[in-house]
Length: 250
Image (cartoon, rainbow, N blue to C red; front, side, top):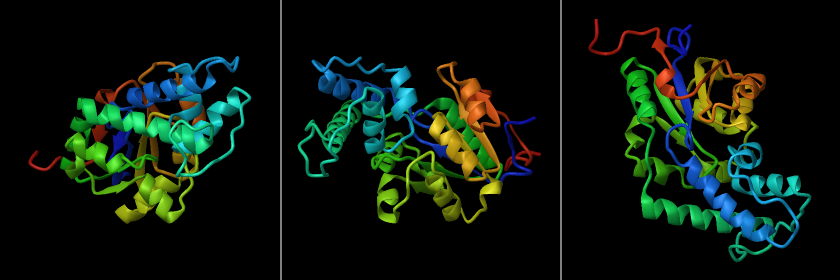
């Protein structure tokens, strides 16, 4: 069976970090820096850049990531607010510190897209499928623009939209459903591509036509299938497309 059967699907919605752009590692490094600095001297295990990132923060809105990871260490902080000093011992303070560090790294080093994802986007669009990109990050548009990919998406839904519309974060399917709404398509005719377990679960809960999981670590296939993935690939170079003749081909 083809990964994407365009006789049944009319669009594909992509998560951003770790699927479209190689920014998941930047997020993970920023989280480790912030959490380790906070936990130092508290007798708690430091942040594991792989296991803890995947389990507690990957795919979640930033503040949810703070709450979920700290809960794993038995730590509860006051919420604080958006005007807290970055690094303050509040949920917002740690979230702001992570955000500032992430932006600094992106500004300094730029953003790289996965070549296999770019090739897949071109293939899908040549075959008449529509495409969208989503992220819980407020920096999604800037990241996608920095990678030079905005022209390959018909819709973009990010953390700014989530805040404005009151959309809950993954594993709630609201971000994906908003992308489908902007594409003017029912979820059943849209595929979701994700690399995080909360995102895979969101695709299942949203009733999307196909859920494709990207397991770059090679360690999450069983968990991704249990969460609802219809197909799991190590990289989108392994994905296949069928169902419509590409424009210009006979």
